[in-house]
Each structure stands twice: as structure tokens, then as C-alpha cells.
Length: 337
Image 1 (cartoon, rainbow, N blue to C red):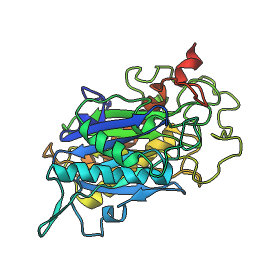
Image 2: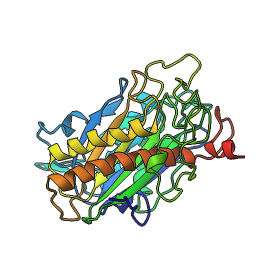
Image 3: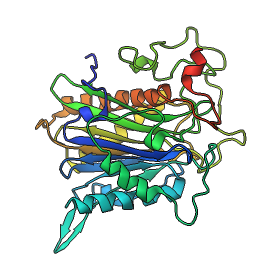
């Protein structure tokens, strides 16, 4: 069964989703939000050893809450968790949230990546700017959005290259769409050795991240361990944080399985991944807009597509990165002259 991208090749090919970005080039950091048009089913899976999160307990299938109103990927390490407060404020102004008597509470899970040592000016004064960037990202949300050096990907780094924000989608023969969004900031590498070939190459569709395939033969140094910083894989200095989404109708438990399966894309696109220094996380959400309820065969195809789509989104984020003043590392395009 060949995989085919959606018309935009973005996570917003999943019906009922909008994405917004905000950021600061001087700071070299930013925020990305994913907003469902209606409250959606969602879950999460964390496989990195150094996560930074908000509201992830509520996403577990055994817990009570079953509607979620927005999702945040942010730079800024622990400071970036403030972004969810800005998103909450914007959604509450729009009348979006979980009703508890006369109160309205937008439920906004969030994850952060470490971009505090990337050449940006982090002298922000008393309070970090992420709350305001979260609010701005909601205002910027729509079906079309830029990727690469934008939003949560502005300050992202990998081992030897700038990271970035990437996205991709897949449309299955049964009419279901799956999409992925990734802020790519791992301690490891997304390319083979020190070359320009992406580890995710077997899943590439239509030259979407260079069309180079894998090198043949693989170079002897292909599986050497390369780290983002000379000091090695120190905890808390990396993280790839992502969202996988579908328009299929899923239970909260099935959304959990979708998040688990999307982590396969990390293993296909990053070497090494899920380390003690990474906080690797997948939020999984289901809008149900297709109306399709999946049997075992359809579910297996969806979960396979989730891993492949995530691998493509990760590679596309690095492929689309653009240079900026003060960068610590080059961008992928510089490897191609």
C-alpha cells in the first residue's frame, strides 16, 4: 500500500485543525500551537528521559478528562511552559474551554524543548516572553503555516545542524488522514554520518526533503555516536517534541496507541533517539472528522502511517531550516553547496 501525502503535506490536512506560530529571532526561540476546531480526543507518550510537560497526566486513558482544546510545543526549556497560559487566555476569550459550573477552563497540554544555549539573547528580564508568544500564536493560527526556522523550531539544534519545525501528512485508501508536526531538537543526528542523506530517506515521498535516498554503501562512520554538544549527551539539553493527528474516530486508548506508534518515526529519523538527554514526546489527537471507525486492519495501517509520517516530518523540519545571525550550527542546505 503506497503512502500518499495530503494536498498540503501538513498536519492541517487532518480536518478540523489549525496551527499557529510565534517567535523572536533575537531570542532564537518560539512557540507553536495546534488548535482543534472542536474539543478532541487525545493522549500522549513520553519516551525520552528528560521531558518538560504540562497537563500530560490528564491525557492518560485511565484518567477522567476526555476533551482537549489546544496543544503547545515551545522553546525555552522550563520557562517555555508559560506559553500554555497565553494559549489558555486566548482560548478563554473566545469562549473555548471545559465548563465546570459557571467556570470555563481551556485544557492545554504543553511540552518544551531546550534552546537556551543556541546563540540567542536570553536576557529577557524578570519574566520570560513565552506567555505572550503563546497568545500571539493563537492569533496566527490557520490551515496554512510556515515550517523550518519558525515557531518552536526557531532555536532548535541537532548534532551538527540546525533543527527546525517540520510537518507532513499521509492519506490512506480508506479516506483517513494522519498528519505530524515536529519541533526537532535532538541530542543525536538526523543525517547519516556527517553527510546530507537523511536517516528517514526510505519513507520520503516525492523528494520532500532532498530526494537523496540513503548513501550506498553506508559510510563506515554511519552509526558513530555524534552529540549536539562537545560535552556529550548531558540531560536536559535536547528534545524532539511532536504531535500526531488523525481525522479517524478513536477512543482515548486508541489515541495512546497512536502516540506509541508515532515514536517509531523517531527511531527511523534520528540516531540515537530516546536518550536520557532527550525529552522525546508525542501528543496524539483525533478529530473524528472523517467519521471512519477503524477495524484491526485499518488501525494497523493508521499506526504504520503514523510512524512513517512522523519520520518525514522530522526530516522536513531540518531540511527547511534557514540561516540566521549568531547561529551555532549550519543549516542542511549548506551541505549541498
